[in-house]
Image (cartoon, rainbow over all chains, first blue to last red; front, side):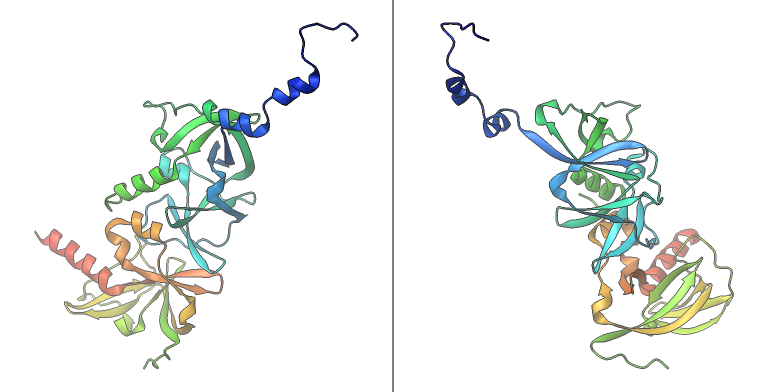
Length: 176
Length: 132
């Protein structure tokens, strides 16, 4: 284009004033999340909590444990509890198939393996696009969610793992 | 007769109920016997074993029997293969959490180590409640 607007600043000056990645991130913070399919739904946890994703090893059931605790498995010399989160939330159950994986998450000094039907991987969403989880009689397990959001693959629910453990503990009568 | 294990290893009695393997401290088991109608029965799982064998254990309150499908014998493991129960498992198992002493890693397979004394205490308190 040859036409120029007399008042327009040169491109170089405009770029000098433009926001960079850091300043945009400061204004619109992003959440890095780890997405997986569990019980036919998409769930996410904070990516920083996920240490590993591995194939499902032999799971040994523990007598007297609640149904959502599928048992324990050996992983790198540790014994990990394997949890079916949809079952804990009353939203169906995860299925152990060839595509199943377990996500090893660490939080609150605990290491837990979450059984996932399928792993999707990392996704980023703007924090301000995270909406409160819909509450109501039809929304089972909404109290375990930090919120809901969506990415190009669709809607997902962000899990509040601390809350999940707290509720599971209370249900078992172990207090808070 | 169970040979004492060295300080760096432990002996565990392995048994099977409904296809699942468990372990227990062999020192808590007095004998392996056939089912006795007089001794109080305790169970680990809801599934009733098809076998007629029982582990007879003795506690301060007397002997009790744990029906099992199969007794696999006593095996030795290095202490390094013992693990405490995962914190989450204890946190969500309520009153029965104490029945799990720990886990032994048999290769890559975790085997629950059951506390027969605690299990017998549950059975005793249940029997007491029924008697009321």
